[in-house]
Length: 301
Ligand code: ZN
Image 1 (cartoon, rainbow, N blue to C red):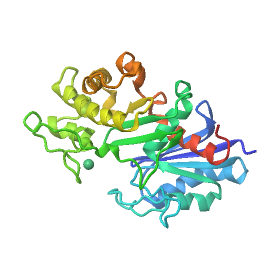
Image 2: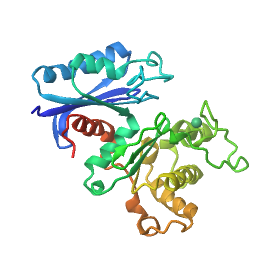
Image 3: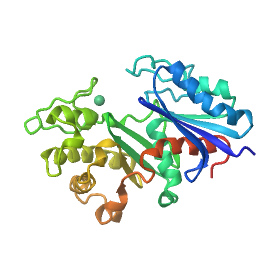
Image 4: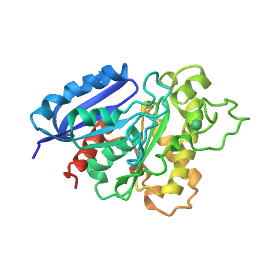
């Protein structure tokens, strides 16, 4: 049996590529700057080809920025569809890699893969069947694990664009989402914080009113996800969440919004075990791709 699988996390600024079998069993790993599709995909293939030629790869997992087409019956399955990133709309990411390496390929969104990485590799999550991963950075993305698998549907979850209450008297900022203005992402992503307060999140000190407002929007979005999906754990990550105060405020506000309605001890008494930072740090996505590849190779458990 092939010893390794490959993982590709296709991001807007870099491609993380990894050959390995688990977070602590890694043969090689590289980061490729995302330039043109031809150049970037060729470099990624150059990284994997020696392993594939020697028969050492059982499968490849790919996760990508999007939106992407996840419908296996669609003629554009595995394509990046409508991204505003120049040159990348309509790119057949999955197909190009599959044809070049001739291996089973698993394909998903970057946030579903990150959710699956946390779900599969954090030992504390091993008994769970559901998990939500939310990342707050240049946008807000949400990945969902339901019944042990990444959730797909008509397309894929876009819960970053949830509608949340927006009190324009208190917060007159109109939001930055080009489609909805003041959806969750429009009000609470990194660029929204920077535009509203005139400086980026990392330059806003503890105690600044920005953090109460940010935490409130995130908590409103998370409460809606808790009501809808009833996830057994929520992983909250992304650049904006590196601010030390944020988790505490978000947890408190989630409890305030739920107002004791959901009678779970995890929500009422141990919310610090329920709403947590990523155990895999910034590597949830690429390690999620490894977990997806193992499943595609029949090595999942
Ligand atoms: Zn939106």
